Length: 429
Length: 76
Image 1 (cartoon, one colour):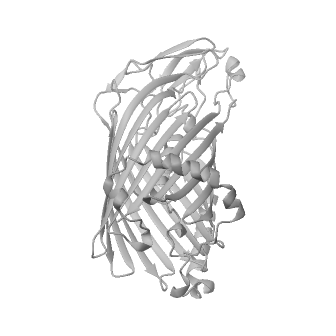
Image 2 (image 1 turned 90 degrees about the vertical axis):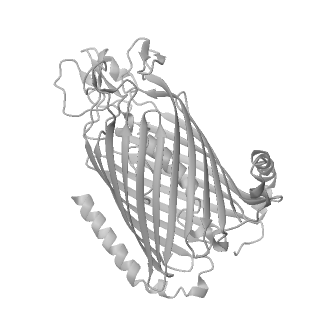
Image 3 (image 1 turned 180 degrees about the vertical axis):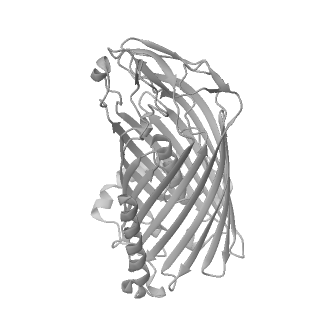
């Protein structure tokens, strides 16, 4: 690896770096002895075993909090094949918007599981919830010759009211003196939703149970990709991918408000979404090696038959400090249009449409993400450590066209601030 | 239709440029020291990337782009 000596700017970071190292030493002191005793490894060293660990702390202002530890173990066989298993646990708690409008008075909402939430007059009503999600993923990679590699994968996850089971396959072929790689992949997931209290009939007040049977959803994914070495320092790639979803795609706990002529909510109705969705996207990526630093760029264009269109730009810059230590700032900007059946709510007496939702995630939405990662090695501990903090800001259409009466004075999509802290550790032996 | 046509043109142009690039042919195997570094992958830290994708999937209306693995979630 060609790395320069630490720069003056790098030297100025020494105090911060020392504190982060100390914090990391405390954080990872409880790692298994095998990991501490093992030697450091990189992908080019191709160690026989690799352990990757990640821990996420995630918090939304006045809403959801998540803690998510993930561990992945990979074993590479002598014949070049590899097998990996990954286990993840999500602990989720907090409050989520119901989809209802501000009431103009204090509102109390009781969820299907019995949780009670009180909202102020101008607040978007939310309902409390908590859940634990456990997931297991496995991958088996089989190289054929030196130019072809196939990877087979499986997935299973389970939470209180949702289960997902899936399999996928991906094939990569190096061509043109190994300067280009063609990738083709596909996957299938069968998901099952079993809402607490049963599945409610659409466009009802939530007391009519349609069925207590689980609701299924099949998801088929495909992808074609091409990556290309352009120069000694530049790698570019393009992916085209699509997803077909079929089955129960409605969010079972979301509702819409019905308002009177003055805009005051008089009732709520359960939402209804189509039972199919076709998504497509094109992703362009580039990685450029400067003297020591590396610049990562990507742009994704996404569209689906619910009429959501989005642009995503992602930029990261890895600034080397020397001795496998680096800073990596991250900026991401995302902008989407609204689904054709997204609405603020209903006017009392108006005819109901075929589909409708007030879920802000299907409305006009922007997300700005700013992050900073610090990657390093510890003197007495092998492996690579990373610590990253990120701030996300979501903002959308606060005063949608068509809002009635008092609702015009409320922000129907208040901005959401999200903070996250991710710690990672990788070691090979 | 305009979007699809534009995407098709971009992809064809990218594929043609990729497969016919003369500059790339000059990158000999012994010149690939930089490209061989783990940090020269599109996603050098796949686990962090997967965590990010899970967050974005749960908070936005779009998904996908670079992977076919991973499972569903009741979060969206």
